[in-house]
Structure formats: C-alpha cells, structure tokens
Length: 225
Image (tube, rainbow, N blue to C red):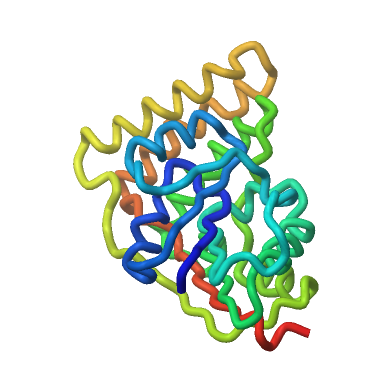
C-alpha cells in the first residue's frame, strides 16, 4: 500500500490508525472544514490535507491503494454519491475501510454516549451544519449493498472505558453541552433541549459514559462488479 486517502478526516484522528496499518504509505486527508484541517496539520505535519467534500473528490479514477472514512459517513449530505466517489478513486485491487459508530444493540452506558452525540447532531442541524443521527448497523450494510460495494468482512469494536470516570470529566462534557445549546438560545428548540443536559448528567452518573459500538468494514475493489 503506497497511498491512502482519508475522507472526512476532521482533525486527523484516524491518521494514527492508518499509520499503524500502512506504515510506509503516503497519506492524504480531505475534509470541507478548514478549521479542522488547520488542527490536523499541527498534529500531522507530514500528511497532506486538502479542503474537499466526499461527494466531489478532485482525484482521477483509480488513484489510491486504499480509501478510508471514519466516523464521517453520517456527516455526508449525499451518502450514495459519496460512496460512488470512494469507489471511483480506489484502484483495482484496492481497499475501502469504513469505520462508523452504530446506534443499535448498545448497553446503558453506550446509550448515554448516543444521547450525547444526538444532542450535538441536533444542535449542528439547527445551526446549519449537516449532521445526521447515528446509523444502525443494518442501515450501513444496506447502503453498501445499494452502492454495489460487497463487504469482505466486518466486525464490531467495543471500548470498555468510561469517558466520564470522574466528576471533572463529566462536568467538562456538561459544559460543552451548555456551550452548544447557547448557539440556539433564541430558538424555540432551546427549551426542549435544555432538560437533556441534566438528564445526560444523571444517566452518566448512573450508567457511565461508554463509546458506542464501532462497526468496521473492509471492502476489496477487485470483486466490485
């Protein structure tokens, strides 16, 4: 694997994983958010980062040995078009890696994480940023089937950690929610969402705050029809 494209790279969080999997590859990260890319460049000065949307990749056909999209599928306004572009830029025999949190079959602590994420996604949508709720496992697999991207294998990854293991960590999350909510303080949804902050705190104290299950999917282009 000589070159890898990371789509929806954000601040470059998945770059660490790609470096472990493909230590000799040249990595390019793309994302439409220039603020996130500026942060990514600080963490990964040897990686090329470009402002670009998944649905309109400015690369030739069959360019990359591998393409990844991690925690970004639910951010795509047009998922089908984005998957079509991914398939287009991967070389024959190339790999597609999809990593995405799912919303089903979660334990109570993971449901707290989903609640936090859906709070954030609602605020984003109200302020003009495209951000869906979390997909179910079957919904993702069905999208790939429709896009004619046959899955080689997939697995579910669970991290048995509590992201709010002490009061300080929990209050940091609560403060983030309050800051997010302030963005819509003049809208009627403010009063609807405000009680969710205390509900989040109560649930996190009772159950913990565990990352939602991550679905990891690997596809090989050589058998794409």
